Image 1 (cartoon, rainbow, N blue to C red):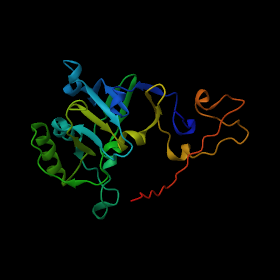
Image 2: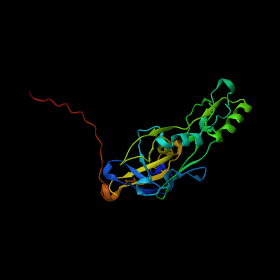
Image 3: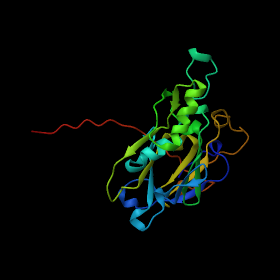
Image 4: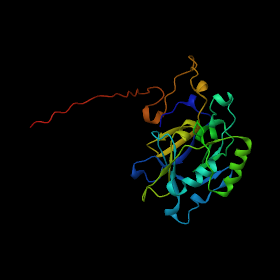
Length: 239
C-alpha cells in the first residue's frame, strides 16, 4: 500500500480485487470502449460471462482474450504517420492517428492513447480482411504509404476459473498509470503517472518526511523503518 505522491497526479481511484484466492491482482472489467463506442466483449449475460483483468508488471503487452484479439487489432491499427526524417528515417507509430482505448474498472476509467499501446515501428502493410479496412488500404495506396501501425496486443487463452474473458494489463497501462497494491484492503489504486521529469523532481528539504500507510508502519511520532533485503541460501542435503 505504500506510494510516492510525487509520481502521480491527483487522488488515487480504487478498484476492489476479485477472487483473491486465485493469487492475482485481479479486477472486474465493466466495459471496454474504442473511441467512445462500447464493445460487446464484456456485456455479460451472466456472472460467468463477465470480463476480468490481471495487472501484471512482467508483461510488455496488453493481453486480449484470444477470440477477440483479431477484432481489437483491426480496430486499433492505423496508417503509419509521415516520418519527420523522410524516407531514411522510420516513422514513429506512437505518433499515429488512432483511437482511444478506454477500460472501465470499478470507479476507474483507464484511457490509453496510441503513444501508450502502439508498437514503435511500423510494419509492412497488408490488405485487411474486414470491409472497414478496405477503404483504409485504398487510402494508403493513394497516399503512397506502405506501412501500418499495430498495437501491442497478445492473445490470452485461459479456461475457467480465470478465463475465458480475461485481459492482462501490462506495460501499456502501467506506464501511463501509477498503481498501488493494498494487500490489507484487497484493492488496487490508480493515478495518472506524472511525466518522468516531474516525477524525478527533488523534494522540498524543508518539508517533513512522508511515511506511506501510517496505520501499517507506525504513527507520525514513531514511524517504523522498513528495510528490504535479499539473501542467498545454500542448502546441503546429508546422504
